[in-house]
Image 1 (cartoon, rainbow, N blue to C red):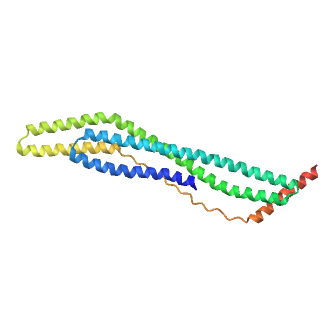
Image 2: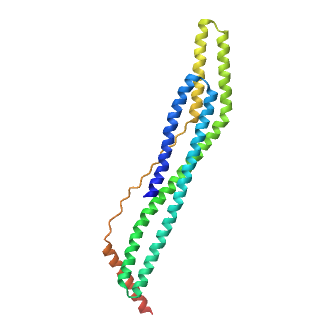
Image 3: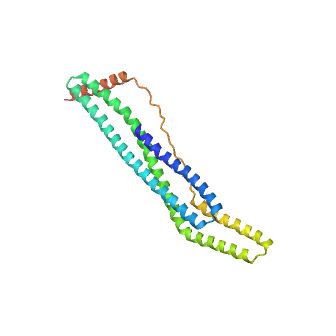
Length: 239
């Protein structure tokens, strides 16, 4: 079950980044209101997102490595199932029924493990694909934000310059109202900038909870032994 935990851990990491981003954005939002410095805040948003991208890249690489390892285990289990059946045939041909029974018992044990491994591997492959897609979306958003940053900085500087000019040219009574209006406009522009930095990293927390049917192993072994005996008998008749 180790691989399953790692796969789910990747998605838990996405959830962690999402929660951290929410907290960071909330704190930066408060900073914008107090400091009223959108240029610095835009740079801060980009730094935060670049850090998140590096973390998600590392998490994705780790899950990809685990997926490849699990794929190898699936292949090994399949080969062992085939090997054990062939060994059971060889044991019967050598008139060693007890050894054939043991080989079939081990084959069935590995076959059950193989079912679990195959489902885990399938889930892991889906997790890797989803993490790659989310990482691609994050990088696309980041590049778009970089392009918009200079334009937003220019708009913010222009808004602040207009606010100062209006304050200097306004009368005492009217100046306060105009300054307040321009301040609200500047906040709206900053909120737009903040909105550009948010993304929805949807959780994709899958769980594996498939129940394996109980098998009457002794009866299945007897049936397989009978089938193998019949096969050997037919082979002898043909010879």
